[in-house]
Image 1 (cartoon, rainbow, N blue to C red):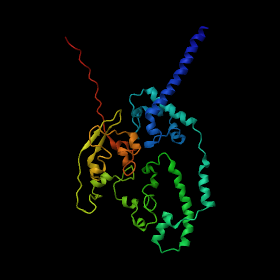
Image 2 (cartoon, one colour):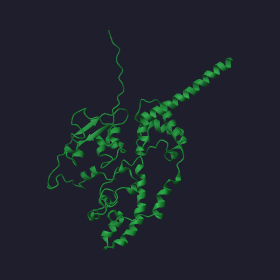
Image 3 (cartoon, one colour):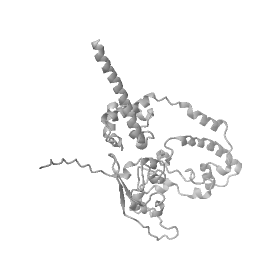
Image 4 (tube, helix red, strand yellow):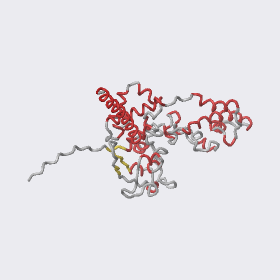
Amino acid sequence: MKIERVILPVLMSAFFGAAAAADAGKVLYTKTCVVCHAAGIAGAPRFGNAADWQPRLAGGTARLYASALKGTAKGMPAKGGNLTASDGDVKAAVDFMLASVKTASPAKPAAAAPVAAPAVATPKVANPKVANPKVAAASVATAPVPAAAAVAPAASIDATANTSGASAADINSFNRLLKPIGKRNPPPTEDGIHDPTNDGTVALMAPLAAYGPLPKSLAGNRVNWVKAIEDKKINPRWDRQDANAAPVVIDLNIVREVKGSMPDVVYPHKQHTEWLDCSNCHPAIFVPQKGANAISMAAILLGEKCGVCHGKVAFPVSECRLCHSKKKEFRPAQATAPATK
């Protein structure tokens, strides 16, 4: 009886201790880790995605713990930026994410079959007004082709080209700048923005050819536009009719303090006003008053505030350090001198 009285509380304590740790891991993931690990921002392994976690598991769990606690060179801050979290909770969050991989159901490889089958078995007759961009480009560059001859090849290509729409439901599709490198900066006839049947579209220069001599970047459309202006590689036109009109450039930095370990955000007016007039942002997007603008990553990801441009026509939110560029100054707490009578 004495042995049972000792062992039973120990077993119960271990059981409830493990359950509490699992709950703490789930809470920390939901509060902090989900921001990057749900969508795979900045290359973070996605929750429940075995393919993302497999190469990282090769290094062992201890290595994953160390990365979560100390941060990584790829941009993940220590403890995901939540420095108030305990080491145990951080490890529990890692275990929670690993458990999602182990319990995830395997993907079915036959999902793509229904898409490919109609392309061969039942090709659709293409409408000449919505011909494939490549066919439209070829028809303008070469001699006129009879309508009957142009329809058949358009139908076969158009049917297979529709398979690209299968990725529209992808979680990263909200941001067209997160496409693979091979699919970035497509020709105007293929970018989904211009009318491929318009002769003027074919006459436009392809972005890859135009961006060739410009300074490179690892973000967005792979062009460092700020440096391109500084190096006089480009000269944005300030007025549509007056080529000599000069921009009203404001050299003013706004610093927004950020909680946690992430560096503070610096908003440089200079780099923005070299391109844009003040009316583009004020007052519709930002109220020009201190404390009047509630800016958060959630709002930006929803296309609000900074997200009106960033992730659409400016570099995406995965480039954290381009905005979070001001390091915090951590000063050790000074010991107070004892009061003297």
